Length: 93
Image (cartoon, rainbow, N blue to C red):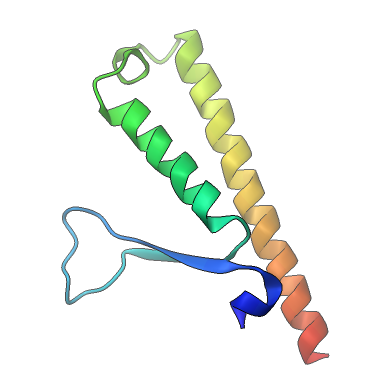
């Protein structure tokens, strides 16, 4: 059904997760799922790869811009989910 709307689902697993347990989190109904995945992986790499952003104190400008980018990304996810819910409501009405 997601394909009909040009949407996809992403499953998130952590290194500590169990294969039998399945995904730690799922995000169904994402538009541009591949771009979202790439953005998340880029953020992960920037924050965990020993970069200046990961080592900087909380008051550093890089951290502030990272927080802004995170808020913007989460806002896009929220808006995407709201659009999906609206489309699903239209289909069932």
